[in-house]
Amino acid sequence: MTWDIRDKQVVLTGGNTGIGKATAEELCRRGARVVITARDAAKGDAAVASIRATVPGAVIDWRPLDLTSRASIEGCAATLLEELEAIDVLVHNAGLILSDRREAEPGVEATFMINHLGPFLLTRLLERRLIESAPARVVVVASAAHRRARGGLDFEDLQATRRYSGELVYSRSKLANILFTNELARRLEGTGVTANSLHPGVVATNFTGDGDATGLWRFFFRFLRPFLKTPDQGARTSVHVACEPSIVGVSGAYFSDSKRATPSAFARDEDAARRLWAASEALLDG
Ligand SMILES: NC(=O)c1ccc[n+]([C@@H]2O[C@H](COP(=O)([O-])OP(=O)(O)OC[C@H]3O[C@@H](n4cnc5c(N)ncnc54)[C@H](OP(=O)(O)O)[C@@H]3O)[C@@H](O)[C@H]2O)c1
Image (cartoon, rainbow, N blue to C red; front, side, top):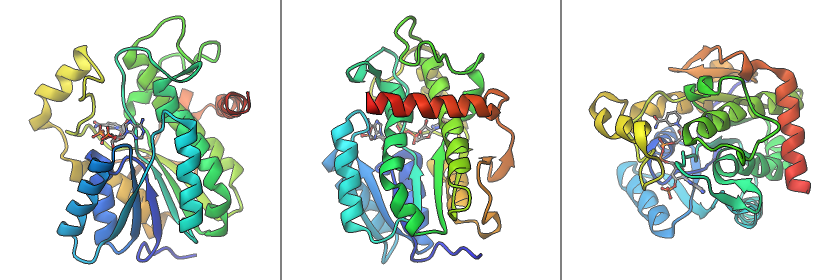
């Protein structure tokens, strides 16, 4: 089986800025057709205009998606299924850290929803089209921050109702990204659709901006900006996992600096991956 990103149809969430926009731009440069999502129309328009101006002939558009809203996720999936005959690559890139506990849907904590449950639902809604498009790839932007989720996921309190720490909840959501990817890879075995996760590096983006995070994280991202990766550098591992022909058939792997890496022991826990999948389904069914 071979893999060439040219003319492949990519869907990439959170593509209006940061790592996502840089990834979308590079994928356009390499000849992919790209649909990014944005939660704000002006930002979606601006990102598409900017990429079209930078990459002559770029085939790119945007569609609305707010991962805090189940209706928005279902609406976005319906639009994509109507408009795209094939989905060859699905990149889950959108994500954030929140300093205060908020609920997205009743009973569902916002970081968990935006970083894990929303991407889980979107994948399930697009799964059939991905399989029909095989060979296809699901790429999940996780983070080395998953290592800070010491003790793993708290299945007794996935919605962080007892105690809320933005950093811990974010780290757990990134651990959830890897567990989800691994279980997805297991379930998609034999379909020709692979699923891999990655750490993009520490990247100077809007991450922790918009008043989303306070304290150390905000300080870290604001004052160490000159020493961090640029968004273009931060996009490299996402681009690698989406484009690289030599990883055809590789699934359930974790990448960092465009190389295979070993995530934490908690991220490799197959029981936890199955349990998270069941809990996510139950939340959506309940
Ligand atoms: N920056 C780093 O050092 C770093 C390190 C490890 C992992 N990551 C991961 O990399 C990914 C991209 O982050 P970034 O650094 O590029 O951050 P960013 O510049 O803040 O971009 C995040 C993207 O996610 C979108 N988003 C946020 N909330 C959303 C929602 N409710 N619904 C839909 N989209 C939403 C944002 O849209 P708006 O523009 O409308 O807010 C934006 O497009 C995230 O998953 C993050 O966890 C980043």
